[in-house]
Image 1 (cartoon, helix red, strand yellow):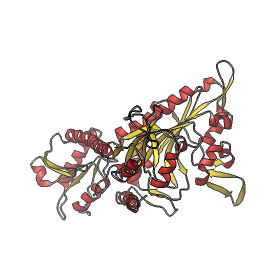
Image 2: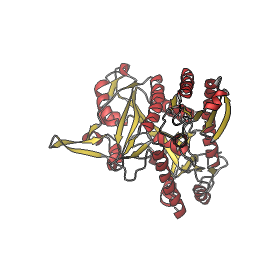
Image 3: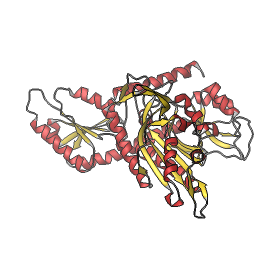
Image 4: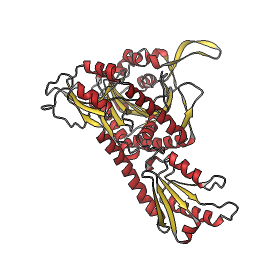
Length: 482
């Protein structure tokens, strides 16, 4: 990797922190590698959580909660799983002033402890499918951390299901992948590529892993969510069995899937400009901020009352609104604060404009000022603009991804594409793992997925490694990633 590329990656990491801190999303914790999520950042997470929680329930899942302390022996029951997570585990060795007879791991994920309970609860095919989800925190002791993208502790959602057949588990795996894709594209306005991970990139202990991959504005890919078909691997390790309709004992087929507060990182690095954060209206804690122009040492009651009436009109249409009536803060400071926070629309109420039946609107995404907007019908106008802003932010991200996706046919073209324009390199691959080693050692890149929506032709496009055309070649997306 070139010195220039290293500098670009370092710059992108500082940019993420700069935007997150100035937008009051998060701050550094006194605990190394952890972050404090501030109220505004947590409000964004609550919006995402609320939307996704309903989608999860609509697909037949129930919420529950499991302890964050996992017996160390549980992780050791599934060899591939413990090997995959051992370097990231934080272990509790003492409690109550005494050394514990069995150590506990702060959950890096919950497959093992949930399987212990599945084995207890599931007896017959009548108990299946069992479809659970929990909202929780996890700890993965990362060596190199950055706000939202990779921290030692983070918040997430993890789903765990048991099924009577492999086909049913596979259907569940792909259904939840689709849920994540809808969440990201329709609500976070982040276009994603969905597809299957390679064997070396799959989740530890899974039969197969599927992912949604987003492209950030620094040209790096972000694994925004994953869904795993665990097959019978964990069921066999924990004895999760059921009696089928023929009165025969079988191991259950399982899935797990999750997203995390990394989604806020996707929004920050997917939607920003030189000013700061740019929030899609669907997940903005407040979609409109109303700023009345207040005069010092003057009677502002009339303009404040008018602003409150406007606020009520917006609320009546379900528009999340904040009225900033602080008299000790100048309007310039307020404007700057809400621009950095990425609030989609800023509505300015001035006494003179109000007398003329007018208002002033500012669009955050285009940094445009619109004067002499009619006061009458303002709520309906704002509702329409918010829908348009959501679409425009998504299209902006989609256009960026299109301009930073390059089709390559050999290793030289691949190296050039990763540096300029950066982003995704699309190519064919014969499955030889030698390519993954070259990517890791020479380019600090990985195969992000084998995309569901393919663009290349296996009868015409050659393998990027061998240079040969073959019907056995697979289309892949390559990128540097968080």
